[in-house]
Length: 196
Image (cartoon, rainbow, N blue to C red; front, side, top):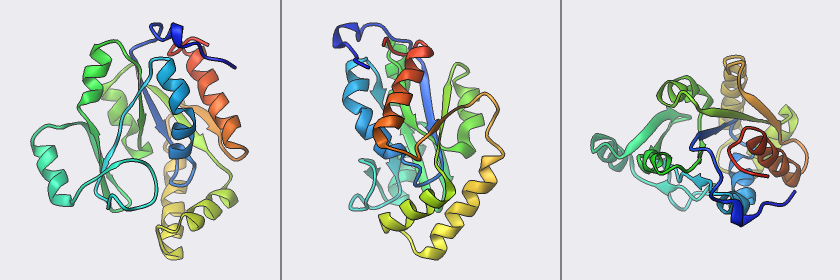
């Protein structure tokens, strides 16, 4: 499937909210699709997280809890939530991008989905799923947490699984990364967010 940069003026100014359990590969899928999404006119929000900038994982902006609180008080976030002992913020820049007519992809949270949908009624929700045994392997392999913390993440993920709303598009990332990327781009095409 090829995406023509000349078509980048065709897109829907819609918020794409990608969710899934920790370790499902959201960061990897976003990074692998980044160039093709950019060519199709999609902006990707960079999250602000109360985690050290040296931590492994996404290219997020790491801040202290105090720094996060100051940014929140200053109105610098369009969305924010707390999960797994960390604070996450989506910069207010996403609202400007949407106003300018760009679709915006956000690495979101299942627990925040209903609030995000309230704020952005036309939101396109996508759930990245992965088989439980693969998810456990990925969480352990990234080395961010102890085995006990990994089990806590898995338990939280299982509890949230049943709470995900019915109108969420589901993508499987248990196989190759390329397969998941192609499925994401195809879904965005079907939904009119980008032109295939």
